[in-house]
Length: 261
Image 1 (spheres, rainbow, N blue to C red):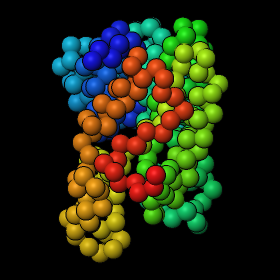
Image 2: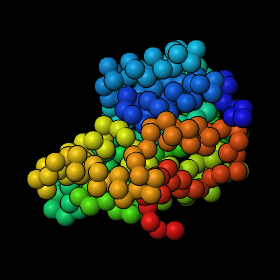
Image 3: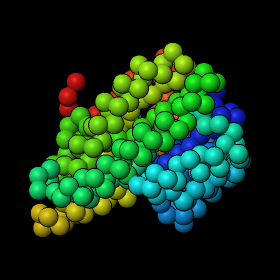
């Protein structure tokens, strides 16, 4: 299937991590020109190699999402190099594991800026050009915690859920301009983040991490953690011409983990 992405310009945030790297790879393999951002410049090297293997040269950007002043300059760099952004993949890092109660206001504010305001401000920066060209894809990666809150991830559950309400509202505002906006949420996909969370739980409960991981995969109907590429391919489809009638949706890529209908 030709996804119609050849020649499109995509920006993938958090592209130094497992999910972001896989998404950048999938988009490049479909012919998109891909700019990649991450807070750690060195983390982008494997991603750039994947893009090069697909026959393209990626544009790396060292990007601290908490610093909103970087947005305009980075987007301008992409526009000068590749042209206006057609596909925006909002993929942010997660906060530390915490209960919902007893957290300092400063901690909530810090992660709200990095995880929510950054996404909203960046999207606002690229929307005028998308509207002018009558085509665009806004895809925001969140967490299964927006549907079934994950214990000890209080900040993540709350802040990521706010992006669901934002995305759904935005879908109604920009749909007639040929722009779709969707939420994609991973279940337990085999990334460093999942390893970190398994290790943190093992330490809290004084158990071997292997036992925690086995218990976790045992709760997934498919009986395993997902592969980042499985997640990325869903994102690539949502970014494509073929997904032109999918908007305002929350797409689960969770191996059947979330029990609710």
